[in-house]
Amino acid sequence: MAAGPLRQRVAADGGGPRAADREPLLSLVTAAKDACEDRRTAVDKAVMLLKSIAEHGTEIAGSELARHTRLSKSTTFRLLGILERNGLVERASGGYRLSLRLLDIGTSAYGPTPRLLRERLLPHLVDLYEMTRETVHLAVLHRTEVLYVYKLHGHRAARAPSEIGGRMPAHSTGIGKALLAFDYDAAEAVLAEPLAAYTPYTIRTPEELRRELRRVAENGIAFDRQETVVGLSCVATPILGAGGRPVAALSVATTDRRFDPGRIAPALRRVAHQASRTLAATTKLPRRP
Image (cartoon, rainbow, N blue to C red):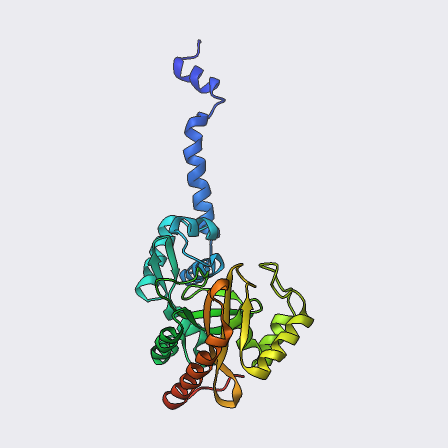
């Protein structure tokens, strides 16, 4: 008996569903398999998102986060919403970034939090800006980098790559060297790693950096002479706490054309001394291990 039209079509297709029909089915099977194999908890996924934002360094779009973490977009945006409600991330023009509240949590075990430093020392930053009319920074050490807690500038601000909540290498910045010179353990951690060169003026060898840190420890003033960005220089000094350990540091950044350490350094010393007294009077600083 001759085969009917239906049997002929099945035979022509190889006895099973057509290729066009198989593709959606395979996608569903793959998605179901991935869901079964993904044993990460919601906390695991949230931590992955935070790490991914931190590694990116600046704002990152939610869709890009989903791609980096291999999470679905719906899961990514749901978790970002939860993190945002709890103040751990915040929206920016380019997507999402870590919040200063998260930085407060991360540094609370090692001394005054960035939030406390901002609250206590903002008047001193304003004083320093009024004295110099240049870009002023407040920063703390974060492993081998400096973490910028606050930045204040005016209309003629030098084009500095620093940003509040951002990080920069400690060995090439004046504010980083001001902190390293008074923190032996942190300095040794930096010296143990390769020293990246950002400009022709960046310190490149451990021996050179050791000499520079000894000089900073002797006179309390550190310099960045176009070591991070060509055309940008700065003067910095630490804010010392109990036992002579650095709590934070202040810097004044300016164009190389306006760079005048003789004018800036005295103002820095005076403001740093006043800032140290303010912290001592209002804060009981925990001892670092």
